[in-house]
Image 1 (tube, rainbow, N blue to C red):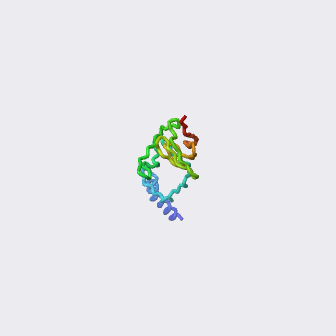
Image 2 (image 1 turned 90 degrees about the horizontal axis):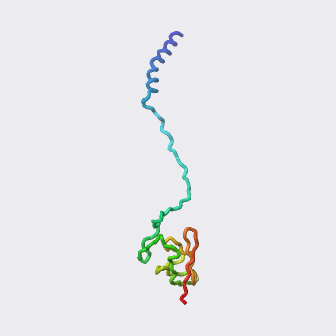
Image 3 (image 1 turned 90 degrees about the vertical axis):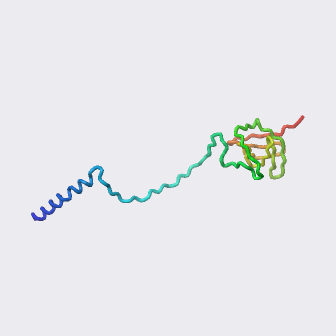
Length: 136
């Protein structure tokens, strides 16, 4: 019994420096590789803030090759409805010399409806109408 007690104490005495060295500051630490962290996708509503600049997703050239200009400071009061050609499915209108179609963008406005004597425009949810001015 005395021999086994001496063996245990001697083993402890030999292992003590190894245990103390492993717990010393600056000692290398062995870490088991962790499983990769998987984040769940977060779905958010995204609204593009144009900072009063042209939306980069709007085309720069029309299908016919004409350069598109988007005047961001165009107010409805500065627009003049110069002409309208309608059919059963909408039509085209001429606003400030630009030909526009129903459902298309005109500057910062969307042309939502073209009728015989007026055009309906929407910008940021605000609806505006342009009417043809009749000559007297």
